[in-house]
Image 1: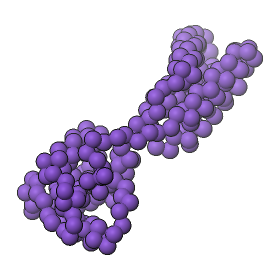
Image 2 (image 1 turned 90 degrees about the horizontal axis):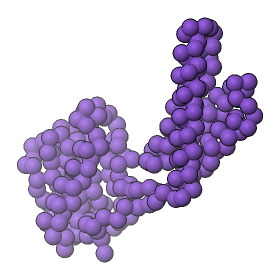
Image 3 (image 1 turned 60 degrees about the vertical axis):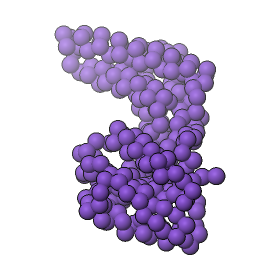
Image 4 (image 1 turned 120 degrees about the horizontal axis):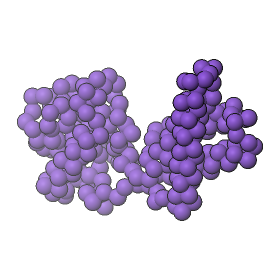
Amino acid sequence: MSMIFFATVVRVRDGLPLSASTDFYHTQDFVECRKRLKTLTLRLAQCPGRGSAESCDFRIHFSASGDVACMAICSRQCPTAMAFCFLETLWWEFTASYDNTCIGLASRPYAFLEFAPNVRMEPVTALGILSLVLNILCAALNLIRGVHLAEHSLQVAHEEIANILAFLVPFVACICQCYLYLFYSPARTMKVVLILLFICLGNVYLHGLRNLWQILFHIGVAFLSSYQILSRQLQEKQLDCGV
């Protein structure tokens, strides 16, 4: 059974919540404890670096350093050492993900909500590895042709700049596809569609510099990579602290 029911990261100077875990515990006592935690966030600047507070059947623990504080609502059975170990781990992970400038400029609640789910991508599949290899191949071909054309155009014709961009834009798009497959990114579907569109338009524009089979190969790899990106789902990261 979970012993840590709720966790949140807040900014110390004004109590602004930066990120929070999803909770499914909705008893009246828990709701009252949430209210007390919210009140406590407004006084963190005057509190010591760490501390605890009692609230009905729960305990509130907090740990602050710099301008970031991590807080948790735990059951009374949760060992204090375990709670603070969890909070310190949460603090290190959050501060490693966001620097002081980002934290200081945050102006809306839960500005870093994407940190809260604490998830990982599913394992890479064999077909996914194939799509990465083909994507890297397409990126290399685009870069080589683009650089070669640029060297030629600087000496002969400046009007070919559009053709150069038609090679270099798909090169960047292929690299972005590799990144989206390997790492989670918010608004992933929209990014995948836009990148696929750039690759398709770039290759259609290059008709004449590439034959039909080359164009179909590059577009086919782009579609395969897009499918693999959207097929690779998130999986929950299992925490040892029982959140």
